[in-house]
Image 1 (tube, rainbow, N blue to C red):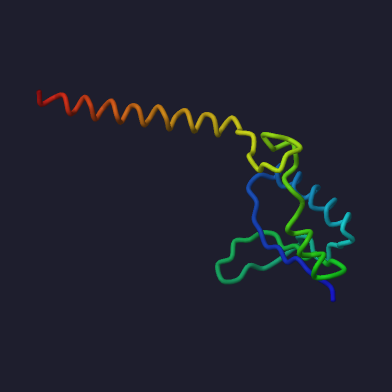
Image 2: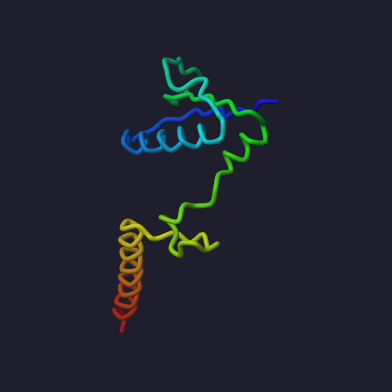
Length: 120
């Protein structure tokens, strides 16, 4: 029995979507899948704001599930490539966010000490 993916989505970054679509096309082709529906005109009902529908057919349900489960994370995003650890490299946004969070915590603690010292 054949297996299917039914995908309904919306995207906000066209360039990122193009990269994703290219990667998905390669993965589907590599696993003997074929696209039956890929975008096209559609009518959204019941307040749905999804702008794209994709239907992919695979030779079997098991293949569709296995392909969706995917391979392990690519080594390019792993902190320790060629290992089983799933720790990813921090991005610039991660580092900035962490730094701002730590500084905010110290500012709050400093403010608490300053307020506590006012009554003395």
